[in-house]
Amino acid sequence: MTHNLTKRRTAWTLVITSLALFMVSLDNLVVTTALPVIRRQLHASVSQLEWTVNAYTLTFAVLLLTGAALGDRFGRRRLFVVGLLLFTGASAFAALATSATMLDVARALQGVGGAVVAPLTLTILSAGVPAERRGLALGIWGGIGGLAVALGPLVGGAVVSGISWHWIFWLNVPIGLVLAPLAWRRLEETHGSESSLDLPGLGLASVGLLGIVWGLVRGNEHGWTSVGIVAPIVVGAGLLAAFVAWELRAPAPMLPMRFFGGRTFTLANVASLLMFFGMFGSIFLLAQYFQTVQGLSPLQSGLRILPWTAMPMFVAPLAGAFSDRIGGERLMAAGLTLQGAGLIWIAAVTTATTPYTGLVGPFMLAGAGMALFFAPVANVILTAVRPEEQGKASGATNAIRELGGVFGVAVLASMFAHGGGYRTPQTFVDGTTTAVYAGGAVVLLGALAAAFIRRAPRMEAAPGGEAAFADAG
Image (cartoon, rainbow, N blue to C red):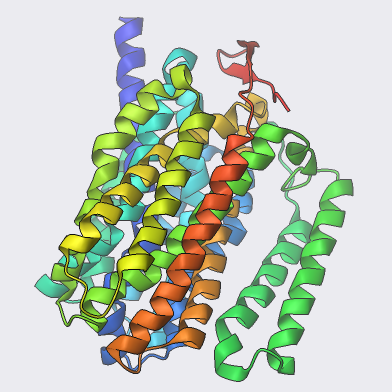
């Protein structure tokens, strides 16, 4: 009886956390195939389009650590439900947007809700799954998160073509309204070991990151040497340096710098940052290519990216199941190599008249690489910290990879605007290929970082039944 109850509880935990992660991860890129339509209907500029993506990912990244800390203090299940309701309400606000500015504000509020939900899915799942099944569960969890990111352009294209762009946000509302009460009933309440909040650290990180991204997004429009661009980037970098200095001496840091003293945690997060930099920045442009250059509909565009987006469905579950046996760090390195090679291949063959058959191969290669990376990365990182620190480690990991996406969109979109732009199909191709070459090179650097990770040995189970892990670095 107890065994069956444990199995049911584990299944419910996996289903609820995976669906919640799918919903918030989908919104990272669900707007990409809708961007050309949004640009026309809301008369948005290139920088406003960037903020449609970055307003979500920036708030999402900055507040992830706070979301994990709030869960540790007030209860992970309680904050998980609050985050779901906030995300659902912000989605309705985005669906009702009548201007690009209103949409960007709604996207920022979505990011706040997502920042509460995403890290708690990992800590709730890790606490609710027996140690012997954790690798498989986290592999499924990571694969579903990666699948959501990959399916974003297809889902967005289908909804925009079939109904309107507003419905890419309305779809979240019924899902959120079902998940919130289900989570309250089926999940167990857990707390972290610390109850204090690092408000100075939050302020320094938030304002510092905002300054850097603000300058990167507006650089092409206002000139990279203008005071309005240089000043926020310099001030932002200074505030981030102050954030690191504060975290080194804070009594209860939101991001313990000692995490980065171990090779596993550091290199895995470097690989994640570089992966999301290249992937997000590239998808931001490639999702628009078929509409802007070849005149296809959003749905037709999403379908053509399907060889890329469908691969995680087949590869990620297998990668998760074998990650403990093969070594998650090896799968990460292999996945990043395939993803980087796929992006460079895409850039090499993309022209204004490239037949679709010429893109299927690199799309499949990139999709397989994405799946091999997403499936084991969470388990690799969690083996580098103690169980009571997994909340902060989860928040840090999610924050770092989302920041990679923020900087990827900002930097590669700037390269796109400098090298081409939206003026003609040819200028779009010129800018896109330059940016995607750079994105592929960055992902290959991530593969190099992953190749130097050493597997962390498992320690004996800690009190309470959770496995304790030590960093091999």
